[in-house]
Amino acid sequence: MPTSNDATPTELDVRIWRGGEDGAYAHYRVPFRESQTVLDVVTFVQRHLDSTLSYRFACRVGMCGSCAMTVNGAPRWTCRTHVSKVAEDGVITIGPLRNLPVIKDLACDMTEFFEKWQRAKGRFSPTRSRREPFERISPETPKRKAVDAGIECINCGVCYSACEVVSLRRDYLGPAALNRAWTLVNDTRDAEHDARIAAVSGDAGCHNCHSHQSCVDHCPKQLSPTASIAGLKRASVGAAWRRLTGR
Amino acid sequence: MSAGVRPRRGALWLAALVHRLSGVALAAFLPLHLLVLGLAIEGEAALDGFLRWTEMPIVKIAETGLVFLLAVHMLGGLRVLVLENLAWSERQKTFATVAAGVSVLVAVGFVVRAM
Image 1 (cartoon, rainbow over the protein chains, first blue to last red):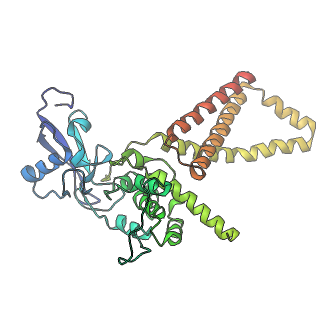
Image 2: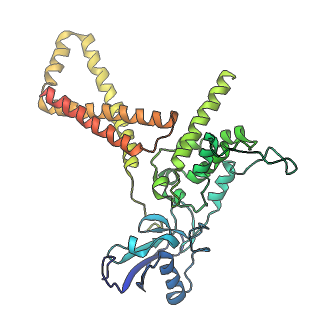
Image 3: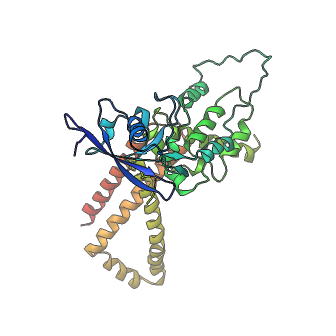
C-alpha cells in the first residue's frame, strides 16, 4: 500500500460516500500525482471510473466555497487540500459535509444553511438611498475592525459542518450565519441593529454556542466565528439590560 | 452507517464536557453534603461518627476528586463568564489548560495535606 510518506507512491485507496443518507462508502483506486488535491481525486473518479458520482465545485482556487466535503473526518475545501497533507497510509475517505442533508454522494442540500442566514438577518439594510453620498467609514474604528475580522466568509459551510451544537440541535443558527450577523451589527450604515440582535438572541441563537471553537479550528479563511458569537452574546445581554432599565 | 465522519474534537470541546460533567457530579453530591450538615443538627455523636468515617483513605481519595471537580468547575465557569462578558481573547485554549492544571494542583495539594 502506498503511503503519503513514500518517495514514489503510485496509487491511492480512495473511499467515497455513494448514495443518500443511507448510502455507503465505495472504494476506488486512483493514481497518485504530484501536487494533487482532493478535488483532483474526486474529479478523476468521476471522469475515469464512475461518471455517476455527484459533487460540487466551481472555481477550483478557494474563492467560491462550493467544493467543501468531509476529508478523513474533517470538513475541508477539497480544492485547497493537498492529498499529501491528508492521506493516511495512502487512504483518503471523502464524504459529504456533516450537519446537512445528503442529496446524493458528495452533494449536500444547503437550503437550511442559507435559510439560517436569512433568519439571522444576514442581509444589509441601508440607512441611505443611492441618491445620498457615501458614508465615510474610517478603517481604524473598533466597529470597522470587528467587521473586517469576519467579513471574508464565503459561505462554504465548513464551520457549520464542524459545529457540534448544530449536530445537537438542528435549528441552531450556526457559526456562519451568526458571524455574518455580527459583521452587520458592527456596520454603522445598517438600519436593523435592534431587529438583528433580537433575531440572534432567540432560542436557537447565539446563546447556544458552547465555544468549542471547532468552527475556528476548521475555517479555511482563518476566521473566528466564536469571537463573533461572543460579541453577539455581549450585544444581546446589553440589549436586554437596556430594555430592563429603559436606558 | 453515517455519511459524515465525525471530526476530531478539540481541547475546548473537552473543556466544555468536563465543565458539564463536573457540574452534574457536584449537583449529585449536594444532597449528601446537606445530609452531613443535617447530622450536626441531630447531635454531636452522629456528626463525629461520620467525620471519623471520612478519615478513611478511600474517602480522602474521593474527597480529592471532589476538590478537583469543585476547582475545575469554578475555574471553567470563570473562563466562560470572561469569554461571554469581557473583550474577546484568542487564548481560550491556554485559559482552559491553565484552569485544568490549577485544578489538578489544588487537588494534589489537598491530598498531600490530608494524608
